[in-house]
Amino acid sequence: MSERMPVLYQKKPCYDIVFSQSFGELWAELSALECGDKRLCIVTDSKVDELYGEEILHLIGDKCQKAVKYVFPQGEENKTLDTVKGLYRFLIEEGFDRKDMLLALGGGVTGDITGYAAATYLRGIDYVQIPTTLLAQADSSIGGKTGVDFDGFKNMVGAFKMPRLVYMNSGALRTLDDRQYFAGFAEVMKHGLIRDALFYEWLIENMYEICERDLNVLQEMLVRSCNVKRLVVEKDPMEQGERALLNFGHTIGHAIEKTKNFKLYHGECVALGAVAAAYISWKKELLTMEEYYEVRDMFVPFYLPISVDDLDPQEVLRLTKSDKKMEAGSVKFILLKKIGKAVIDRTVTDEEILAAIEEINFSEEDAHA
Ligand code: GLY
Image (cartoon, rainbow, N blue to C red; front, side):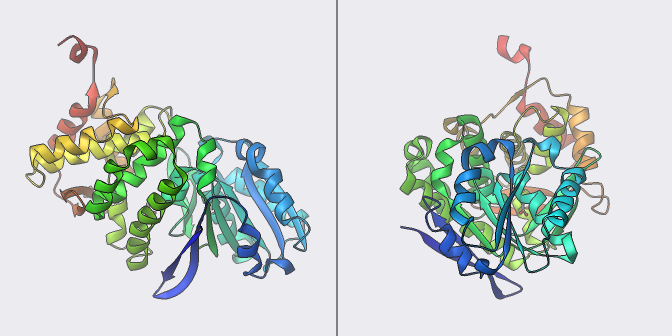
């Protein structure tokens, strides 16, 4: 049974999130957006294309005016203006005009690139998110953040552009490799930690089914996780305030991602950054010691790291600050006041950040201690 969650933008209904376990209802959803009269371009990467590209093309191919596919090479290193430029050229050659539509089929990189192209091609055309990774289903496909990396800076160029529909097939999560699946789970855990203690407890109670990827449990997990994200982005779509809470784990997480040359997955770095932020929360007497250790240890059964080899604390600190350079001089940290309640804190010192980095830094000496 599929479910539907309407999302408001500026207090008006804007798009629906459809939770399904297959692509079976995709065309019905697209035709409700009058796609029968449009040209549709599926934008996807080389890996997702192999899995679902032809299936989706076949589903929509003879029902709309024209259906085409733009495939770019898989990988975060392709989340660039060059990939967007290639897409613009393709759309011009295929005669796409302002009433036509893009379909982002894939993970976070695909959604961000497609959304950015949709925000800018002909000053804006419609797009639909069809996320196939857990990271994209739980987080990046909702809320209209789009963009590309620029000169080594993550998401440096972008736009807010709301999709017309988010269609989630939780069945697609079963084709992810374990590492990618569990990395995406870090964002789900984040939603429980920042805003919904009951959901956090539910995740722990359903640990076995989540690890086994039971489809009904996955669907409930996504509905509850997306509901947290929906509540936050509806209230603060342009990140003027509360939306920053969604960056829990990301301040130190992004710095680790960068210092490790993107060898660790984004979600793995978010788990590490969440442990570091929870540690600072304990040291600032927001969390108790027991709560800190619980938050830390609950990543382990979901195969997420809570420590990492050979961090250079000063380098991570420098990157943490450069990531936030544009926020009026103060590092905006997201801390936990308790499990299920995050707060924005601008008082975290360099010493506190360094101590938190040491906490997640695993060295040979620790191994022999
Ligand atoms: N991924 C954080 C946000 O959408 O604001």
